[in-house]
Structure formats: structure tokens, C-alpha cells
Length: 154
View: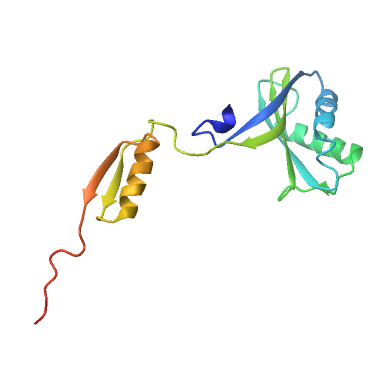
């Protein structure tokens, strides 16, 4: 349903876990990431909300090292990884992103501001205006004629 909803660029499938230590974070992340990391470079990224004895970079370093040792990866690449392992820590909850899926990434129906359509008398400008109206955009028109007002030479 999310994949066919206008206005959604992407959405993610996430697993929810509870944890107590960084070992628990690695233990929960390993099964999700093991297969997709084979032969590829990777990097862990963590968002952290709440008070903990560690910061986001500590989680990233620990998970990077643990995944690199326990899987058949091509290594850790902080600049341009093939795979990005996304984590979020909120209080004692851990969210591990399994997959990031594309959405339609088009205009949401009826929630954009008005648009101006230039009508030149040709077929293409009328069709593009019709398509914008059909997508729910409030369309205003401005007609112009480039052929009018030309002087004929004798």
C-alpha cells in the first residue's frame, strides 16, 4: 500500500528489539545484515535518542568491527559503502532497518500549491495541463501567442 501512495519517496522495513549492551546491538544486527554484506563494503550509521553510556559513534564502531569480523565482507568503507547498515537506538529499544523500498515519488493528490500552465495554442501544453489537473494540482492558465503582432515586410 505504501509503495503505491503518491508523495512517498521511500519507506523502510524495520525490526524492533530491546537491548542492554552493545553486544546485544551487534547480536540483533548480525542476522539481519549477514547475507547482504557478503563480498561488499559496508558502513553502520546510528541515530541515538535518550541517555546512554555510549554515543552514536561508539555504536557505529562496535557494529562495524563486529560485522567485519563475523561476516564475509569486503571491508568497512566510511566514505562510499556498497551497503549502509541503518540503526536507531531509542532508550532501550533498537530498530534495525531490513530494507529501504522505493515509493511512487510523485505529487500527492490535492496538497500542492497552485501551478501556472503556459498555453501556447499547441497540443502539448494542453496535454501537460490536463495531466497536472488529473494529479490534483490547482492549475492556473496563461495564454500567449508568439505569432501575433509580427510586422510583414514589403
